[in-house]
Amino acid sequence: MAAAAWASWHKALRGAVGFVRGVSCFYVVYNYGGFLSKVDGPSMFPTFTGRGDWVVAEALPGLSDRVQVGDVVISTRPIQADENIIKRVTAVQGQTVNVDKAGSIAPVQIQVPPGHVWLQGDNLILSRDSREYGPVPLALVKGRVVAQLWPSIKWVERKFK
Amino acid sequence: MHKFVRQGLWLLPVGIAFTDCIASVLKVEGASMRPTLNPDSNGPSDWVLVEKLSVKLQRCYTRGEVVVLWAPDNPHQQIIKRLLAVEGDTIIEDAKTHSWTEVPQGRCWIEGDNAPMSGDSKSAFGPVHLGLLEGRVTHIVWPPARMGRVAVQEQPARLLQTDRRHV
Image 1 (cartoon, rainbow over the protein chains, first blue to last red):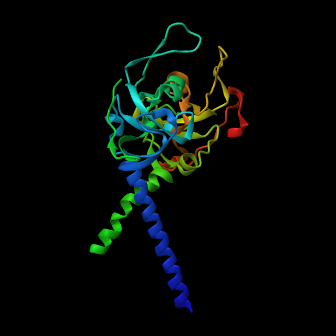
Image 2: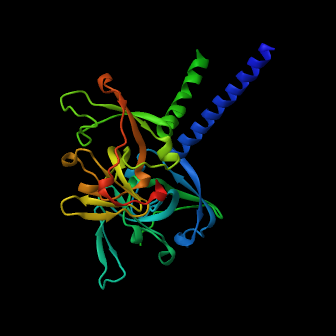
Image 3: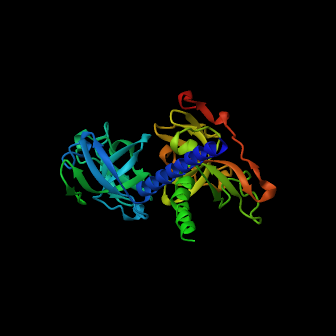
């Protein structure tokens, strides 16, 4: 009787260890390697349809140093930390951006501070981005989109306006 | 021998996942949290236990707790400050001039206990994004003489208005 009880405990423990190992592996690959993400929303049209496109993003160490103007990135949503956004980097630290602010005649000049990037959706009309919530700290950027898998396979290029 | 090496290799992803998401130990550098942390410039640095699960996964924030976060101006550096206010709160920036700021959605206000030597929301960054928070400092684990809990110190006198929805 004792032997049977021990055998089932041992089996449960082996299962738990396997689970922890599996989850840890997935976590490390997702945060230090690459991951898939689904694009919902029209803010990056026409680059992505925003109706369930699947993209591949890389999150290799040194990501913050590799992000450049024109890259499409996935970042923690600045106004809601438990959500993600996908936008294009249109300016990096030190560069100046002109933003039309409601209520002022001339565009406002904003300089992107150290450690931050300026994000904008490719679909300017239907995108809530840095024009609304300001520069985004690089530590929030989780991945750099390199390719789309669905609805068609294509590289996602660095693009300048 | 082979089996032990294989078993041991699993420590790497499990260790990384654990220290990223559950808890880790961090060495405190600098004087910005005196006297709470590193009170003696001639003594050894404090090492603290940082609990991450509640902050990173549950997004649970407590006013007055000491937190670890990524520096807004340097994505490679972590800083340790006290969380004074969260989104929706209104905080008095300067007691003398009585200037105040409403903390915008998705952000929080952090300050070092040692104001003159701290780069924080008051002196440098303004409200910082909640997504930058990594964990809470719960205990000092080294040196032995200073082992113990790191207290939560709310500062209600600094808050004009608090948004209790966020706790």
